[in-house]
Image 1 (cartoon, rainbow, N blue to C red):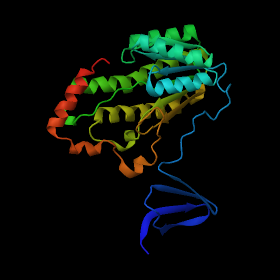
Image 2: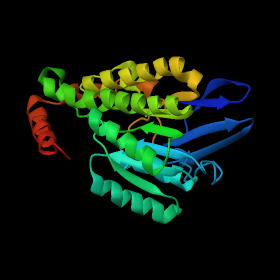
Image 3: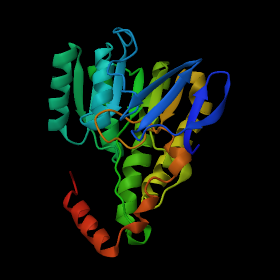
Image 4: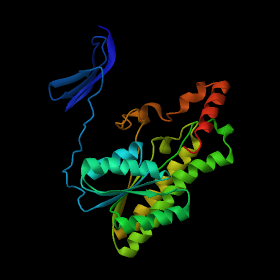
Length: 285
């Protein structure tokens, strides 16, 4: 009988190959003797947070890049759990719209603070506003980032600096600035940095981002060792590609295809020219 590479995993039972199943895409999961499966897709993501609604009551959360995308989603979740949130990015109008939208749904305060994380003076001013409007934060999420794909031989010094200034320097300015204020106030906090799986593996065509994200992880490891005595915790999360508003968390991508942009070796020079033109048109967006 023909065998397909369908692996059955069972609690307490050795993994083994099983006969070929019908042609529909099926995932098998086994718990004891009961086999569960879903055709067409993996198990649907949970749509509600698995924490009590008052988990972050009385806490202040500061989120960079909080006006859109992943930052907006995290802000909404923290606000729904009772946190008073302060969101920061360059575009104040977008921030205010997001703050009003989330606050109207959760009933909790969401403040908008303009900040360019690349600029130490802007970061310092944003931290002062944060403390003034909400107090010292208990949660700090370094989410602001920038990236674009490009062959490394096409990178200009300015292109390199743009990404590393946002990702690495911006994270450092925010983390060190808030950390110093927390030390003076003798308060602890939890820091979270959003990085990527290729911070460890490296990846072609995104070398500035890979280098900067690896630096962020090094910063977090270093400060965890140094500032733990002040009651500060440092965590890193490495989301995989985000295809929709629901996060797809790696799903084994690291072991199966480390360097998620490596396949771009197939892109022709003419196609790179077109993509570069499109990227340049989005400058400042």
